[in-house]
Length: 490
Ligand code: UGA
Image 1 (cartoon, rainbow, N blue to C red):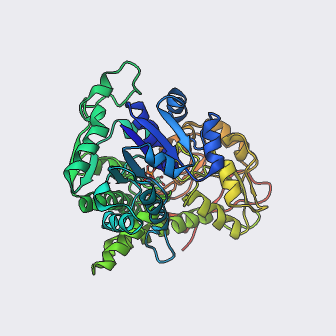
Image 2 (cartoon, protein in one colour; image 1 turned 60 degrees about the vertical axis):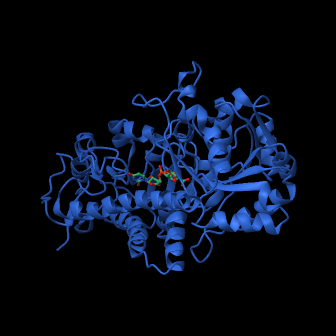
Image 3 (cartoon, protein in one colour; image 1 turned 180 degrees about the vertical axis):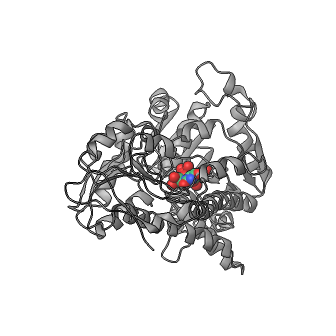
């Protein structure tokens, strides 16, 4: 099928490329001329595993790039809308880009087409889309509108798209149903998975993707409810981590115990500094706003957002309690992206924490495998340096080392080397990438989430389980002293 994607951001570019991969003729459109020029030259504007390879495989054959909406719509049987739906000041989704694109599509429609809403939008957007298309001149029988939400995650977007848990097709008429079935047929029939040169998928892949057919409104709700549920899972475990830490339990053991119940599952139960990114914060807020519009106070979501914010300030307390005052301290920071595997720093909890540390007078030396330049563009401050080329470089001479992003490479550090490089042996892990034993065996004092601080054997201190130690234990470095002292507050 001939397909156009209007909007070549994360979802648009990945989806366009993957539909080309499964056999369609696709045009990926964007009004950012520089982005399209980069793609035309063979560049990839985002850091995403496997995306460059696939673009390279199909560019100029089944995958094309354009800035011309009208021409691309005319050439296509189906048009996917994949423009941004940012958060407005009131917390709702700002749908002005979707509306603008819809009016441009309307004026280009010359024969019956499927218009698919793939951007994350509030329920009933399909209705508004239909109205906008008609108001802008598209004859009522020249299009069908469907909702086909996307569930891919940054960092694993290509495999998520090609090996989905489910494809949700929200359609209110036969034309939309059969067009969506045709588009995804290579995945739902399993044909794609028998190709020799397919992108490799998970070992437990069942062989075919399942399509869930719903009406358009249900599909729209599924997307918001899914993201909200996942965010709720994260806030839930972060709330449990507070109790776990206070009583001297270990949140990793608690998670393993909870997650092994099939009804709950182990995923999205990693306690940390809270969720971020371009999706969860805005989608949870938008879903909350949608509920209010329909007369329901979805206070559970307010609590999810509150816990998420609190998790950041809790982490700051932990850092303060580890190094005492922040003014003039040099802190090594590992990770700036909102999660591992991406260069995306939008709504990154890591950046929020760096800003707060700087506000309190700390000097931050940050390292991220790919996100440093994006972070530097977003937050410029003479107290932050982004020049380090390795975790060891930021550790050297620092008063403490902080992990803020769950990059795989940060889970495999040479801790003895880190110990030697740090000015004081303080390691504050906001993503629980280590076990307390691993860190303390290397001679470092370990602060993590949902577990009491852990001390190396040589630093003897009466840490008792059952006390809120993160606030009561203060590490007090003093000039010229390399061995830390732990002070218990009353
Ligand atoms: C999320 C959803 O997972 C996708 O299904 C969805 O398609 C996407 O939003 C979207 O709406 O476009 P993404 O934002 O790429 O995907 O990132 P996630 O992997 O979901 O992580 C979100 C945040 O939660 C990150 O900051 C991550 O560090 C945090 N997180 C995740 C935790 O703190 N703990 C966990 O156990 C899992």
